[in-house]
Amino acid sequence: MSDAHTLARSTLVLDTPSPADRTAFEIGWDHAHYRLVPPADHLHEGHPMRQGWEAGQAVFGARTLRATPHVRKWLQLRLNAWLRGKAFDTVAVTPHFLKAIDVPVCPITGEALTHGTGLPSDASVDRVNNDAGYAAGNLAVMSVRANRAKSLYDWRDAACFARQIEAGRLGTIDGLSAGQWARLASLMSLCTPLTHAEAASLPLLVLPPPRLRVLNPVQALQVVLTLRFCYPGRLPRVDQVVALFPEGVRLALHNLLTTLLARRIAAGPAADAAALRRAMEAAWAQPLVLRRWQRVALRLTPAQCERIVELAVQRRLAGSELRCLSFEVATDGWALETNGRAAADSPEPMRQQLPAPAAVHEVTALPPTPARTELPRWLAL
Image (cartoon, rainbow, N blue to C red; front, side, top):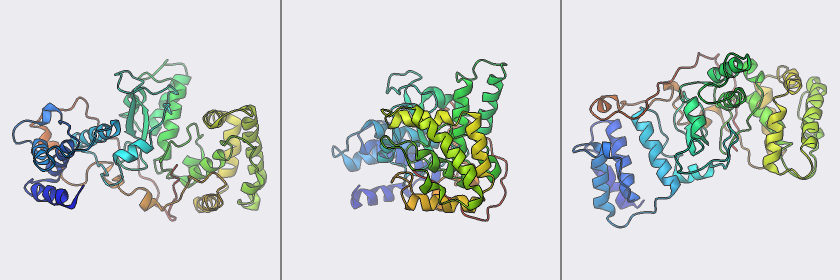
């Protein structure tokens, strides 16, 4: 956007009285920038979204940008976030970012994702941690079916549903099987601040999708170890990783890595990267793998896990696409302090005068976690 366009929008936005109105104005403005029309529910006289749309049309005229599918998804996400009073990081979450996190297969159901068909298999973008905002590192692409199922729940709910189904009391819950709820719990836990002991007890049933941020140091270490076995070609050496660990846990670590290596070999020499990821995720469903991991993880502190991850990333022992940031930088824009709600004025007063959205879900707050003495690290894929 040119400086003139930015100045024009800034001048026009000054007349809107609240942060919620300014957000709606900017959503309307960006619809005009891409020559799109906002939903009819937001085009009645005096609505700030209509004001922004009309102001944008006056400024841009025919000099508009092409509305790609990711642009449309970006505008839809911003509209949904505004309607529900959720925080949205407009600096980091862009159409380009949404394109970067796109995947061909749902990480929860394993089904190939479709686009624009109206089916439950259609791709959708959702927050991984429902108690955080729409921000970089907390968004993942999954099927509409998985998205709808998780909308009201946190990772503990998902884990509970998996146990209930496995106990034989229910066949499915909200259309997901026990295994799918377990995968959902695993994914959601990665973006949820947990105690060290709690995070160390969880299997890695889903490797992080692109650009996801892993908040708990022990799970970041779990990801690093697993990714060692996810690259096609020559079998990985384990001695380079073992050398990063304290002497007291190396024997237990060697047993874990030997078990993971056996799973890697069983996948076959011709397995591609996607097949290897599926094989290693399936390995974590085995009780033996989880027990051997816990014998390692529970002997380490969060600070030790962070240090090992940093060294592994520096030496590229788990690929070249990983990086480490402080907890504060990693969760910038997540609005954890407000459970994902927009910190300023909520759009609730306006929504009482406008048609209600199809679904508005309230977020359940997580129980408080102990204070951190060390800054945890995250991994961005």
